[in-house]
Image (tube, rainbow over all chains, first blue to last red; front, side):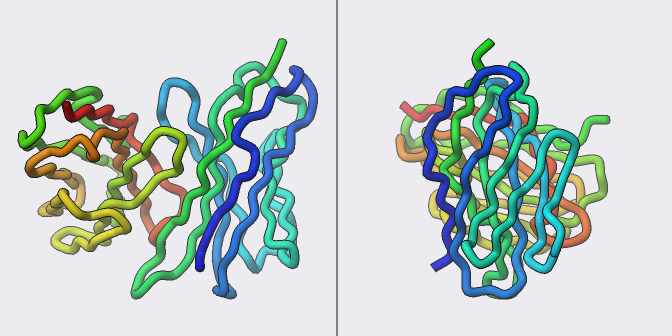
Length: 116
Length: 113
């Protein structure tokens, strides 16, 4: 079965500390993609970072990096030097092929609260 | 830059009423999607479209209908609203490959009472 698991419902982190948000996935596909999205309290979904299954280097986008461990089927998001504005829900998603098209499978999310 | 525009932002329906959630994008994206987000859950795909005139069911299509007569517009129709359809609805689009980086609308909070 194709599945995304985010085991941390909520996290509290002190401002300026690094944060790791966990994401594990299950798929039998050889080609897939992994995404992280941020959802602030205002509700919109914001793309953060993408990792393809064949990418050998971990993806980075500014303060965001994706710790991709293929053998362990994990794709953890690392936020360096956290800021108060990082407080939000964070969703991990996996792109897999279903029937004749691609679909995204979403995790349940992690609520991150940054403490001043 | 408008991006993906959804209307309305909030709506309360009575059981059995119908309504259409509007979605339009100005990025010339081929792929468009409707998701619903229930409290404490990830997104679930309702319907998607790979281009004008082509739509297909997602994971939770029952109780909904869509059409895609133009590249820009992808309305979602709720027929005979039920309390189980209380949710936040998101429209999204992407350009080249289905499910590459998605651009999302701001969401519609729908309550069915």
